[in-house]
Amino acid sequence: MTPEEHLAPYAQRSDRTRGRVHEEAGHPYRGTYQRDRDRIIHSTAFRRLEYKTQVFVNHEGDHYRTRLTHTIEVAQIARSIARALRLNEDLAESISLAHDLGHTPFGHTGERVMNELMKEHGGFEHNRQSLRVVEKLEERYACFAGLNLTWETREGIIKHSSYYDHPEVKLYLPEEQPSLEAQIIDYADEIAYNNHDLDDGLSSGLINLDEVKELALWKRVCRAVDTGPEGSADRKILIRTVIRGIINLLATDLIETTRGAIETLGIQSFDDVKKAGRRIVGLDPAIERENGELKEFLMHRLYQHYRVVRMGIKAQRVLTDLFSIYQNHPGALSDSYSRRIGADGLEQTISDYIAGMTDRYALEEHQKLTDPMIRV
Image 1 (cartoon, rainbow, N blue to C red):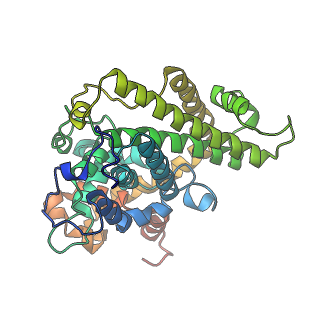
Image 2 (cartoon, rainbow, N blue to C red):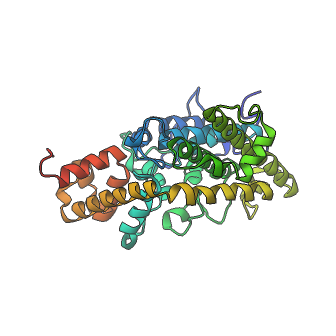
């Protein structure tokens, strides 16, 4: 049995792809979505994720997650869910690996700052930027700009959120539901970042373990997994055991709840998924509430911690200064971006340039342009 023959009738099949913008011959050994995945992995934007922040700025420590490690974790969770639901694992993986390609340096602070700086020019949103990266900004082929990914991978990137009120989104039929492969990415992403932010927050000391132990999800998992006799477990082992258990609990519940929704809604084909009228993938309401409690906890105890806020203030200043300098001195942009100004406009070009920076590069560029003692 081939992998495609194993797929459920509601999965996306490669022979039903809406194709690429630029037609290409098939490959004898690699499937359609495998080729998407490989192009993403070999892209410049993907490599840059290694030095882009999740919560902690790159130089804060070697063991904290980056956009790259986060992306790998999302892909791993998504593939596991896709396999259990008999969905197209290659498509799920390709969307996972591309979902953060357009993220700014300095994590969500960077996105918020860029959206403010670009408010008079269409705003900034990282899913739209990820689509822009794969459709236009990557330069790897002689015959076309971008990576020439399939329609389904690109749809999964832009429908990763409900941010549908932009012209480029309308090309991807916002009235249709995304594939189940795309729908599971929203949850795989959330499962990954909630739990690794919890892990990193505990490791850094910004989050208090005694407070975490009061969370409903933590208590639920502690009742279900073996953490040793009370008080005997090493703190690191305890944390890793329970967080691993939370990830497993959420992924398992997602699989089982989604199977139930597929049956309840009578989903029997891929067309049924597209016309469902609502998202099919989801968590059990009780687990959703407990997961929401975890998100609220992270918002108040980690993302609003004074040290994270201080890092955000520095990030805001760096990005704001860079944007202003390039606006007032377009000649300071690199040659590869300067030549885009005529077609894309100055502000969009600046936005593309800054969004593509790593944390480290943005800090170095800011120092070069603001410190007279540093070589340019």
